[in-house]
Image (cartoon, rainbow, N blue to C red):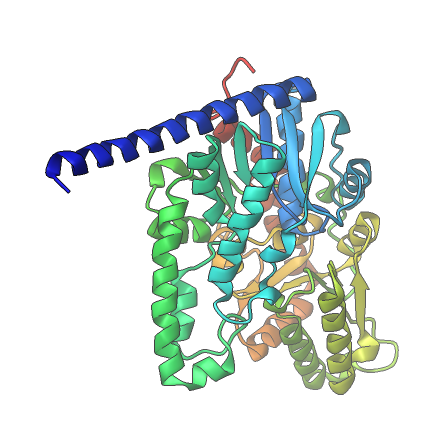
Amino acid sequence: MTLAALTACLFGLLGAVVLVLVLWSHDIQSRKRTQRRHLEGGPILGFFHPFCDAGGGGERVLWVAIKAIQDTWPNVVCVIYCWDNAGPVEQVLQKAKVQFNVDIDPSTVRFQTLKRWRFLEAERYRIFTLLGQSLGSVLVGWEAMQLLLPDVFIDTVGFAFVYPLAKYMFGCKVVAYTHYPTISADMLGKVVSGVTDFNNSSMVARSSVLTRGKIWYYRLFAWLYGIVGRTADVVMVNSTWTLGHVNSIWKIPKRTAVVYPPCNTESLQSFSLENREPWIVSVAQFRPEKAHKLQLSAFQTLLEREPKYRQEGSKIRLILIGGSRNAEDRKRVEELKQYAEDCSIYEQVEFIENAKYSTLLEYLQKGSIGLHSMRDEHFGIGIVEYMAAGLIPVAHNSGGPKLDIVTMHQGSKTGFLAETVNEFADALEEALRLPSEEQLRMRIHARQHVVDRFSEESFSSRFVGALRKVIPDHQ
């Protein structure tokens, strides 16, 4: 083949690619116009949040964000891409009202049901879980775009591999609210140091060959994660800890800002700070990373140190309140109950699954200590709510609790931080032994520290401010 013929072929191929892209773009714009006429609304914001009916902190962010959008842009249509077990819109919104006290107008909310959501589940990928889930999210993202094409694609669960698909294939603006980076230096550090954890099995930790392989796998994944993350137009992160990790991987600091998640500080600050029951309250979904077993072990250690806490008539209790999403979570709760039995503390431990918001408030109003034991918690909404409600927080000495929440206020402590079972037992014991006046002083400083900084009003203002970069002011 002559050079001229080869050049002609290359230009012909390039022309065909350009033609396909032009036709693709024309088809996308046509679909958008058709969808807007059908929805009879303004711009379409698509929220990628498959498990929107769950009851965790991520869902609070979703619903408060949508409420803020409705208050700012009444004609904007919010579409949520969700799994097929979520239920009708009205039912899920009512659940959000009960759990989070967030009242959403259903008239501008639409659900698009995803059939391929199982590709997002970690259990589907026994090996290479991060990569499997990420590639699976691309398939689910493609399905979402085919169902309904938004003007702005908003990811609120952390599936960054969908971003280039939404942006370059479907012409959407991309907004990310990142609770937790999919890969971080801390995760890599655990593998390098041979630490057994929920993301590093004991089999890998014991093997130098598997450890080296996993290190290279994590490094490759981090490189890919950086590439896809940098395609986002606007990035919001929920804490200083997350900001540092995201900036180190995505490297777009000018497009990235901290927007603390919404916490129910307004209503909780009305609770009295005095006359509390000696209850240790833990609020966290029943997932392995929440380290409920560590809490039970610390409580056992506390009771062994202080026999008076076991005596008949003792009111001290450990109350575990959390969302149970599926059969695996329910099985985990049963295993925790059995562990409490084995530790001979079951009679002083309560397990409350999928509590109503009113039930949660009752325990926050009466409890003395708020316990949270997850390592590298990206933020810790539950801890903020403890402090606003008047509980003394005992949290893990890492992540958001260490950097943003359980910090000094006007030169005074606002709670306790710990890492090991013994340290948590120490902190619980110290908090329980504080004289009434010192307990009250700590509760006052803790509440003052969080009520304004982490309020729903503050979140809504910052979230809407970030969205203005991709939604015209005249909308």
